[in-house]
Image (cartoon, rainbow, N blue to C red; front, side, top):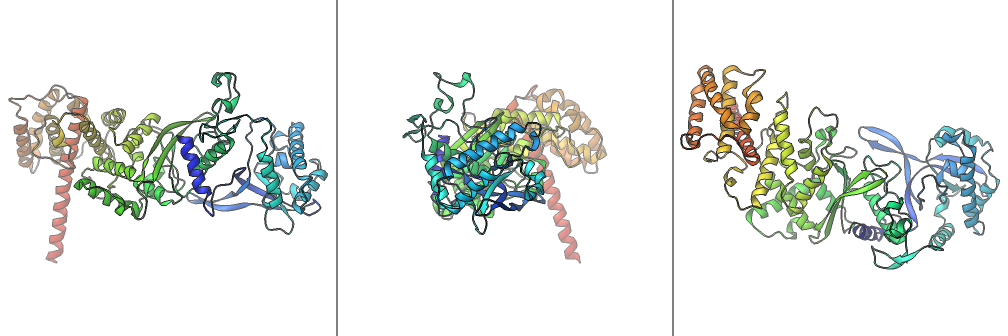
Length: 622
């Protein structure tokens, strides 16, 4: 299904008038230099082909991206490319292999032979110039133009050819293109078979092109489909014959995937855990992807989502915000969602999300999702509705993206900020399929709450963690018959709930506030010393805390207010008839945390409202 979807996307984009994808037999490549040849084959100029690009806050030089004859796949084998290759093949320069003169000589001879075989009989100035150059040039020949750029050439980068006085490059010449395409069309000795992607009988690709742009994968590219050891083959078949994909289908899916992973794609990739995530619709219109990226809060260019650098570069798409609000309103009212809110987009268009992870020189498919665009938006909207929670501070985001949730599962002291690989994929799939969130995510959040300590600018029970705990419990409840905790899974405080775990969480927040009012900030508050025990085994802790609170109430200026709150909560708990539980289950611990968060947020909102009223009165008095 993945390869079929990518092939269809290639067909859609390649049919566009100014398609960013190359035709069959061609590929996009970074080109660093152009050798300008006279009609007689003499090297008359050397041009650097670099352009300025923004990389974060810096402007750097990057090679020019051009469509060239399709690049071959090679590791240690000798395999020249046509009219676009590195200096070792084109000029026979040894570079880093100065101690191995035969290394460069063999590659230059292979490059020379390929071009003489294809271009000797071609009657055009471009072909005659290349063949004349290759017939007369030798690697030992010292050319002043090349000596001036020797260091850059040895560092790598592709070279192409240009004819003196012409504006285009030699590989763009019509006759040369015709020769190359005829060469690519020859399949002498190629195995014919039924393609698993298209169903057609066609020449089977022995090797599939490398895929580049996967974070932490081989920089030169990795393989999505490949068989390079006897343990992987079946019935002594060689390489690609074990999973027959036609040459055209292999070209189409690798070209489309490389485009999705490249900087040319307007809908930039993002990262979740170890997965590099790309997304596309069966349409050439990039707006589908733009709205999806806006809903997920994809970080700005060159900043991997889920990293520290992305925090200050929160990106929201205004169109996505409007769309999310419109769909969310209809869902909350129980209304049917149609195309009215999609601003001209086709709601039935298929939409895809693909997560890829590195595995040495291979690529693993971490997850693959497909559905109609409308259903995809509905599921994302449902996720944000399940996460909806009263905020601690006004500047906190309404919608919390997946990467920010995953960041809360990693210790702040850890040097590696990546969450567990399988956890990232499980979370995204649960969002896109509208299924229960992974239990591992919930357990990871509880673990972090137990292990972390409050610090300057950080609370271990914060907005993101509380929202995810609430969402996890909502979805777990939605797919079960239990209804005992529904009343506490609200956006804000429920003062009438008698759910024991929720009330105990609220009570702990009140006891903490009493201590702060009595003695201010201390090195070890009751939260630092008792929260974990109170959350897991409340009966062993709350009697101690209640006795301690009487001392704090006596010292606090408004202790009687807190005393009244404590009495009200104890009455709701009815401890005489229902003693404080000795232990709380994992789900009840989440409810305890939610009750604590709700009560603390209610304190903050009352304080903020009182401050606003005081400010208003001061302005009126003047």
